[in-house]
Length: 220
Image (cartoon, rainbow, N blue to C red; front, side):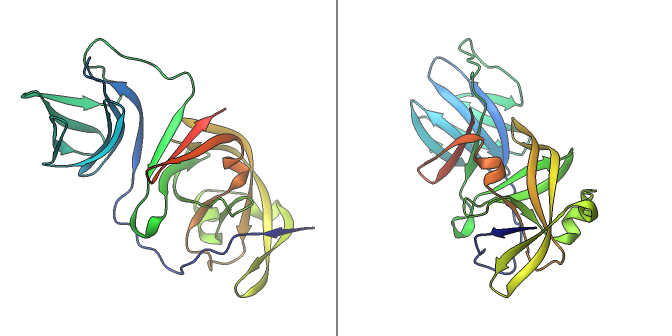
């Protein structure tokens, strides 16, 4: 048996309004415009080295965001409109990053939500550096097809006292372009935990920084 300490999550119920979709890096033109992330109604750009979260209809440094979805963005650059989608190169300065990166914009309440996958199935994570492991409730484990019943018995300390868990190994966990294999996780035997925490069993395998409220995960 193992006893784990897990950071207490500060709220009991969370409702998702919009989910961030992370994409690889693109350099659009010689003007040094880099698309870092896309989500509904906004785009995360690097314009001449400055990080900008641009909303639809807004202009910064001569770059106007006409429209943004989880798939692509329509930008107006020097009066010319260009649509940018996943893996699309515009201009001649494309640069592939040697290390894979994921950028996660801080959302309401300062929490970093990111969509990922466990064993190929979608899951919405909250990044939590205070959690020892990836941690989820019973309903999530069942939905993801995790064999928690054969997991190792463990315990966690919560606001409501000590609770029993099952410790399992996840064959594959993906966030953006970063994939880790054989990642330890904890499954609660009830649904008291309202979210799935992306804990240190995943985070410790990469470099992590925060730039102007945007969390950057980089593969080592």
